[in-house]
Length: 198
Image (cartoon, rainbow, N blue to C red):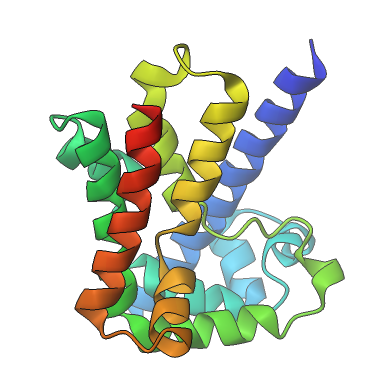
């Protein structure tokens, strides 16, 4: 098995483990049960040590699980957009994540402040959510074999960086844009990039 296959398999397994932890935490939150790494470990049947590699403290886990309650799965986002031509499909994904960030901005800012306050050395396994990247990869499946691998990777990375809370914060706090102008500017930038590829 090649290193690429091994790395892909490990990455997918890490995402599955992370998803299982988040789903268990989300269930505990929705039931109003006490949140602790021990309770999440018991509910997910994953060791506390493993959970700690993904979420170094209960505040980060609770914050992300709370946001997760309001976030569609990547499969749902894909199903909602698969009928669109590829540029509109990617812009739909961007709009979904930018609306999500704006509609839950205080919670996202709180999550980022907790996450960024952690020791960088503890973040090795954390991977954050990666929903944006996963949704883009699903959207690009029919086009992946037609794109040069470096173009495909740049497209995923740049598109991901133009959606979600981080670019919303930048456009609002640094560029002093309102919500609509922030979304419009980010959509314009992504459309220019997509038009040069498709």
